[in-house]
Image 1 (cartoon, rainbow, N blue to C red):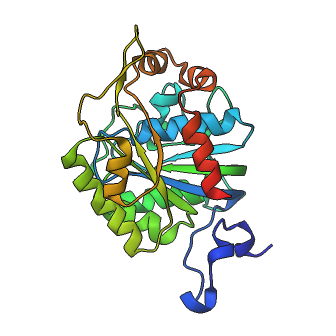
Image 2 (cartoon, rainbow, N blue to C red; image 1 turned 180 degrees about the horizontal axis):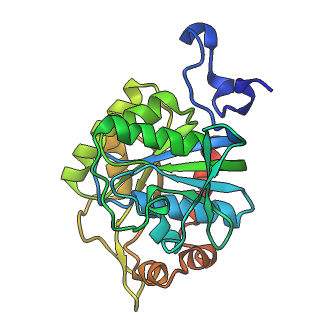
Amino acid sequence: MSNCDGCSSKSKCSKEDKGGCKYILPKYGNVKHIIGIMSGKGGVGKSTVTGIMASKLRNSGYKVGVLDGDITGPSMPRFFGINDKRADILQVGESEEIKFSPVESSSGIKVISLNLLTEEEEQPVIWRAPMITGVLKQMYSDTSWGELDYLLIDMPPGTGDVALTVMQEIPMEGVIIVSTPQDMVSMIVKKVVIMAEDLKVNILGVVENMSYVKCGKCGEKVRLFSENSAKEQADYLGLELLAEMPINSDLVKNMEAKKAEEYISKSLEYNDLLNNFIKKLK
């Protein structure tokens, strides 16, 4: 098998145009689709959207992995309730190479995160950018993913070194942009959209998180941050709207009880996100 056989972007890649393959591929497994979840700003819910997407895909029968790419602020282990576990670091034969054995969530989602490799999850990462990007690439390439239908990368906010590395060196099939209904946030998120367009990365669409709060008595949607619709915000970004997601205290409660996957699998609230995402990849 050539390196190209395991690349999710091989159908869109021309080695002749690019002067040779520039992508890093996983050493220990085969991944069909690699999708980045990103935003220009922190606090908009990228990790939540990543966790919901992964849970919905897994509940639909797909084999799913999650790479926690936010090296300095990893949160995926907490989302999946596996923050008390640690990934195994294994030696490859008699060589000096190592591979990481990811931690599996309750439904079988394979997760690798720096917080699964440190002794304490509160331990800060005080590294400069080259080390951060190096560790991210190693976590991606040296993890024993096995056979995956989808690998979701929870990316750090902004347009810095890590985002640039992922876009240029990992064969992503596309990215999902996460925003919230605030004018200032939309302006900052627009920077990431322009970055992705400049780098010719396929943008699948935008998810507007924290769009509204649903009244528990009458079901009315109350928009706390902006009267503009999610469609209007998506039009400003020049993107297709994949889903608008509410502020959901029930999801938070289930996350704290380490039951997020179980809650998401039963909830109909996130079906639009899953269905529109699948349509975009067809």
